[in-house]
Length: 511
Ligand SMILES: *[C@@H]1O[C@H](CO)[C@@H](O)[C@H](O)[C@H]1NC(C)=O
Ligand SMILES: *[C@@H]1O[C@H](CO)[C@@H](O)[C@H](O)[C@H]1NC(C)=O
Ligand SMILES: *[C@@H]1O[C@H](CO)[C@@H](O)[C@H](O)[C@H]1NC(C)=O
Image (cartoon, rainbow, N blue to C red; front, side, top):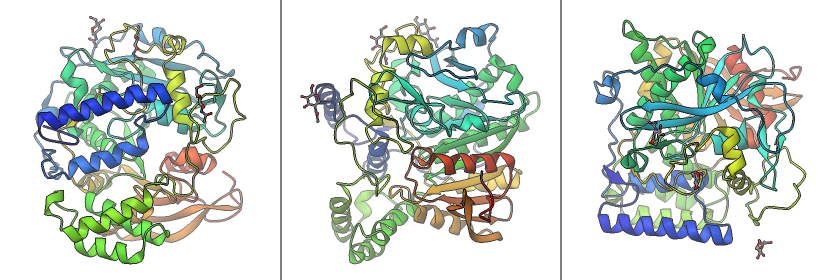
């Protein structure tokens, strides 16, 4: 097991000191928080550091790993659903659907529990499917991003204490469940201190599975409901790995069956080599770095082993690319960056496209004692670290992260699980060029050729469908967090995914 950034305990100490100092600095000047836009880059650096001990071995579908073998414990959830019902969040506009928040224990002996936030559908909650959303990182919160900045029913105002409605919330299409995972992220915690410091893909998948079966016990009316899993970024690992865990347990006799129908991943980490090559290709094709630098990177860099196997020529070219792209938000190359992280005494007029300073509004809101009380979060006050952060600053080690998740995508296609892969086409970090490269190496036969898809008379993006039921779709003009930047197009996408219908190929469609 290794740290994200180093091997030796001295450098770990240094890292922790820097993290600690940066927390203090951020409290002083409001800057320097760890955001989703930084975490993935830092993680990649750590993963390919020459001293990295992160297990990158490919997923073995017959993996008899200890985590799959952990005994499944379903606890009595009697009465807990009623306790979890949220009356009203502070500063919330009035709504006509129910919302819940609370903890589900995922490991009793360790004292590990995941925080969830659940919003029922705005109408037809009894027939619409159940949709789980996961954010990536690793270490970033589905509450911070998914629920309160992307596809949830509310967004936080610039005053940090009131909310406004998101007209394109995904609970127009489904009952939507957000979970903060793994332990150490957001309000999810463990009474065993190492749990919040050390994470890994396998442990996360297994804990997410334990969360889900116990949550379904608490909300039994959703047990037989069509179930879908969605997520973005590093959730390109979490989503398929949870789906794989569900299929594994569904196949075993005497087990609880989860009615998994499909998965949807966006701007997703799929294949390390393709993701990285595609990123530099995107930088050059979008006029961020010189073509010669890109050509040098593609020629000189291997992207398959650790950093010390890379030549000086490779590293030098990468250094130029870093310099050129560092000043912009590569997660949405055309978006403004946040220039003033201060809260405002009166809320700014809400915009449809996310305010680039929204992380700061969300941090202020989630750390309010009245908000935590209303959410039923941090109830026992036993979260040892001091503040809720959008991306964990306590999780510092990661044990395993396979170099590709393509074998899992193939497994789902073979098991009639719907697979959709989408891509906001202004993201430069896990860009459309990366996703296209990963799909290309899958070598799938085509069902419907590439064509524009439409919403309200405009091109919403482009799509191509592969035989064996896999859909690829871009979302035009959206960055890494697609629903934050193109909320209407994102809602149309999720509606078609859930309905299992092709994205509209003519201008006449208006949803
Ligand atoms: C963690 O410890 C606190 C205090 O003893 C306890 O109230 C809580 O239930 C424990 N959490 C879990 C998940 O067991
Ligand atoms: C943010 O608030 C601090 C403290 O009130 C103030 O000193 C600073 O000038 C503000 N920043 C901006 C950009 O307005
Ligand atoms: C949890 O609540 C305690 C007070 O009960 C507070 O000191 C602490 O900052 C909170 N932790 C988080 C992560 O919000």
